[in-house]
Image (cartoon, rainbow, N blue to C red; front, side, top):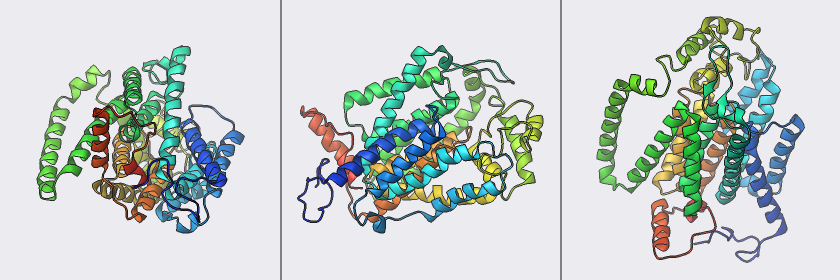
Length: 443
């Protein structure tokens, strides 16, 4: 089996482990690009348009330095192309074009690059770049909270006063909490340095508690539950799979009944009300707008920005206060890009989850990460608009990764790799300097 520091294939007479300058340049550009993108797509750092386009150019350059034949072997998702293309085409009917160009530069153009990276770049580079970026983002959040008191209180809005809860360098605390939750999945799978992993978990726990985000709380509970359930599911023998799923479903139903019966108590303890902080009013206004243009929507980014432009003006009158998004992923999709848009999105999102679950059952840690992270995004989208915006490039990346992984005939065991590494650590073996297990590389 190839080691982590060796290339997986022999390149034109070059011995295993050797490097050529073009390969080194390619790897470094990919890592730098993936390191920078979370800071840009989640708008943690305000940057001018030229800088945003420059980083996208860096990603394109990284792809152009790929090894010969990479693009010929690449499998591209037509559903991803169709969905992102539909969002771009909506510029021809967008009702409010104020932020269309800005959103396209931050989310839609990177989506194409992320799709190509997922379909062509080795998994080790992707994880390395994202983990470097994630750790940097954690440090930047902590630095912002320590140095800027305004990041520890949510700014007042027209319908409510200043809200308690940390939001760091982000516009809203839920933007920070959702990013933290998805990052936990990567740490669970790919951070093999025990001390660094637990320090990161501790920082994330403090940030989520300080944010007082109900969405973040629900997301982290789901991630921990789903991750452990999936690991247990993979370990089941084939004859025990059906009973395991049955009893898991029964337990889920019991949990839902208990949760609904104790919901008023939980809401009161968390400072919420029966309208989920006005979300039911927002959903009513969004449904009113959807009924008037259901097929094609109002265009990508065509609502919520300018209060005096329809349909935002009429929605605000029905909602009763200033809202900034739909607070629901599915409703937000239909409102902006219509029923056509949500169908195209489901053609991208559902196959990604199905493929990743199939890979996870084969023992692939990347499959486990994608299915848990994808479902976490879907769960948190019940109260936040996560399907459009910074998560578009991430979903396209995941689809590219699953397509590339399905091409590989290699099957390595995620749980066996974890068990072997645990045994090594128990014998006093030094912890790996790499943050990527072999199971992911060969997936």
